[in-house]
Length: 394
Ligand SMILES: Cc1cc2nc3c(=O)[nH]c(=O)nc-3n(C[C@H](O)[C@H](O)[C@H](O)COP(=O)(O)O)c2cc1C
Ligand SMILES: [Fe+2]
Ligand SMILES: [Fe+2]
Image 1: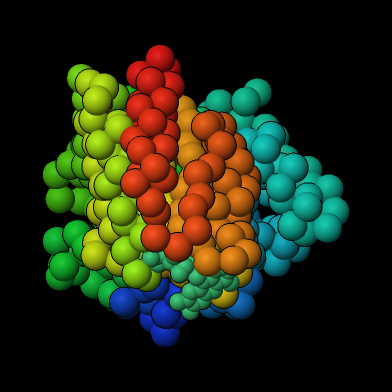
Image 2: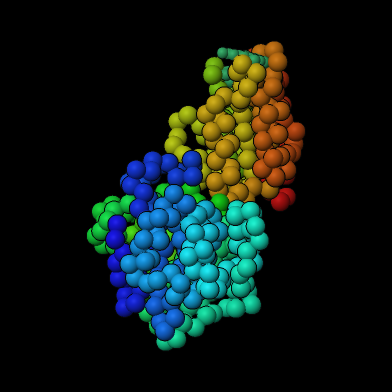
């Protein structure tokens, strides 16, 4: 795609990747993605971000249609991830006189990615750069979605360049939010995959740009946002905010081949309900990922149950457990339970996963052979009571 002017002296100079089907081997993309890079002209010239390495030629060609790279004065790296820094080495070769501005963390990561140290002016010491008639102001936005991230604000044109924030994996050459159909689904899926684990940081970043009189948001993936641009940070704010719940909330996630682990789950829930807590009991194969995520992030206590099947936890439960890293978990503790026949590994494996996710495991797990007896179910109830008491004690 050819470069285009977004505002007077502000150009898109990125690259498109319509055939991409899974971004970062993590997030399915329906319509590929774009790697957006921008050129800003004042008396001096700045480039904001680059593209993925295999698109470096396209990016440099786009840049050259507008300026001789030797005339680029400043390069801004908002975030060091290779989908935006992949063409940086080539750009630095082509623009040896340019000064590089980035966060200290990004400077460190770039060194690791490029295999040599990088000369860069840290934005912590240089919070803005004047291009003559145009200013680039740097706003820290750590963990959106790497620790290194900054936003760049161009006050004269009221344009925010937030790198990955407010992006969408969506390649449509119309390139503006009001021209691209059905952007909302891609925008939301992107938030869920990349930003949701950092809810608190999202809220902080959105707060820090609250007073900006946004005219345009130029993210690093997908369309430029020009239709009531304030709606986009507002949506992030709503998605990142957790509902206030008056009572402690305990979620039980379980799978069960023959119903034994389910009976344990129900008896544990009875025990939980003897205290003043909200209990959500979820059979993981009956719900979709968004419901699992919502349960994982609103729980103050988490109970995970699986039978042992071929020396392992049931796969749908592994899938549910893998979602722990995709949300901001607020649970104070977690525990495991399950039925087994002879070797009984599942409960220990779940506990290990919970510990790996830095969740305190208490009380230690409960497992019974085959069908739980009346006495076993009574133990489950007591286990539930104890668990709820610990959650409530917080
Ligand atoms: C296909 C299959 C494989 C199993 N593999 C194991 C195993 O490796 N170790 C074990 O302790 N029990 C194993 N079991 C026994 C189950 O853990 C046991 O039947 C348990 O009570 C099932 O609980 P559920 O009703 O919650 O599914 C297996 C059962 C099935 C159906
Ligand atoms: Fe990124
Ligand atoms: Fe990115």
